Image (cartoon, rainbow, N blue to C red; front, side):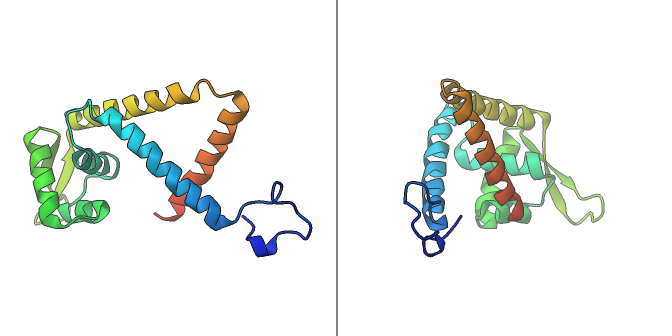
Length: 158
């Protein structure tokens, strides 16, 4: 994106690219609203948002230690211990000794945990697809390009 001060002389605001901070502000707001709306789909599920989030980290990034999970979720270990205990009681995760260091315990999702997370994701994706379906091919292609750019930005942060 081109900062305002670097816009070509005589470029009209209608044709000039918006400043990066303007785009960032709109993306931030849109992402929050989208996630809040999609989170309503999770209300039909059995788990709270924090538990679903922790389970997602374990499914897609696991097996992980409790400390790694707490860091990923940006919570303190005691908070994560409570969440993991509940996930374990529900049969969604198990604790296993680390193969390389028996003193370390890793959290692994069970088949039931993976199924629950997959079903929730499918509900959210279906809800979003229903909203996208009425859009024209051009708008859908634009959103596909935007999603690819956002994925690229997110990958840089990992």
